[in-house]
Image (tube, rainbow, N blue to C red; front, side):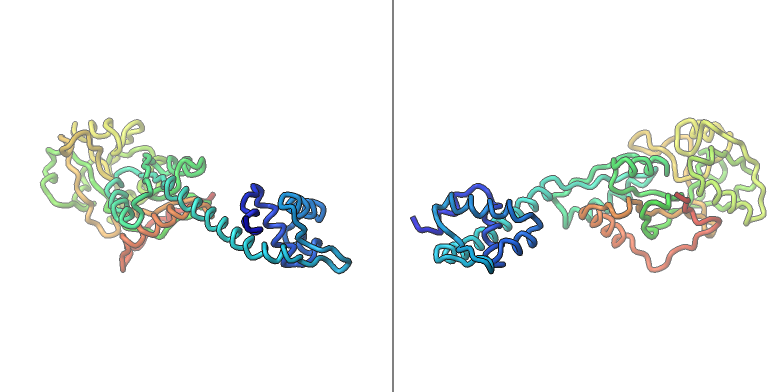
Length: 324
């Protein structure tokens, strides 16, 4: 059996690294410094390797060490074995990352189509990555799930916690009016705030969507209208209790749309976009700072590329960013 081949039978890779380090430095002391270990364990590694091989690899002297002829023969093979082992470990790491890769996405109310479009585009370059979705209807849902590491990122609307990374808006969606299907306005393609001046505005609890709440009232104020309002503390445009109020003719909501309870649009209500200037709400991607995995970062980049817009609608009323 060739002398260099016997090294491959060794089970402890530390011995090989110790051998290469001492051979390069020609000093046990300097090699120990490079490996960030103390000198005694390094000397033991070399002695254990020599005992295993039945060879003397170094001649010790006051100035350091010198490789013996068997040591010189083995050094080249040891380097090749170290490189092969490193390649093997990197390949295994890549295999693990590919096999177990996933991105956990929180989806705010009504943003399924937005996220699904990104998922389809993302899968073209990342077919082995699993995209897992979770409901994050309100800003406090996504905040809590991000902090507890249940989510990698969330597609959300303001307000945004200043402790998170928040992308530039990927797009702006129109504020929707949810009105009774029997309303004379229901047959239009869109409506304005002035069209709704005589309608009762149903108001949900502000904490559920404070930026949207304030933006709606600001739109009325900008048009010089004081709306007739009716508080609905246990109902809103996001639940069936609110839909019942609208369908019964109690008033209208403004929000992000209306829940789908089947394969066809919900009956009894009509959803129309508000066509006033700036009657929009921004959608951004929220993630933890300095904590995005490679696949999560790629998913965010894919979304930004897909929804890139040359002109952004200016924000109104408030910035929509909360203090941490």
